[in-house]
Image (cartoon, rainbow, N blue to C red; front, side, top):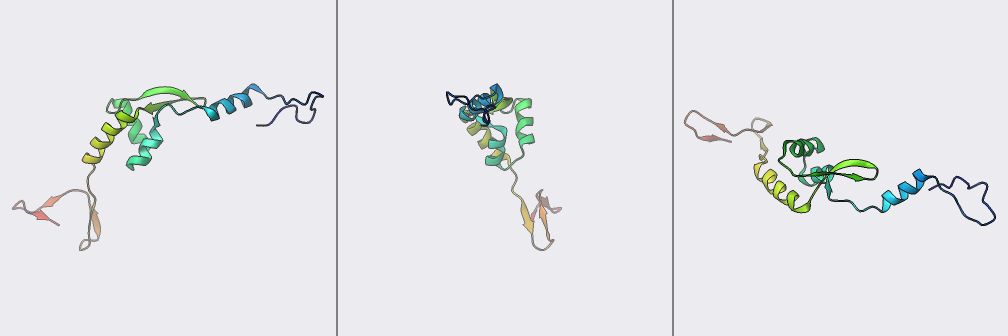
Length: 117
């Protein structure tokens, strides 16, 4: 924080700060009201956009709250745990085929319904 009277310090020795600087200090001490979309995305290995999309569709309960001067989505820990178990169970395993030299994102079967790997 930078006082606006730094160069003209009064006899009493007090610094004066703008309201904006004081609010920055309050915001820095503010406790986070839950998990942010970025926190969730980082933990699950998905994008923040995916998490936000699931919030807007109602798949993930969240509340908009003020934090550090911005209104953001925050998710309760218990809601996150339920969401995470659902997302991780639905996440498809990515398989790499050495013979073909690329990743298979879909299970492939031959005509007799035998799994090809």
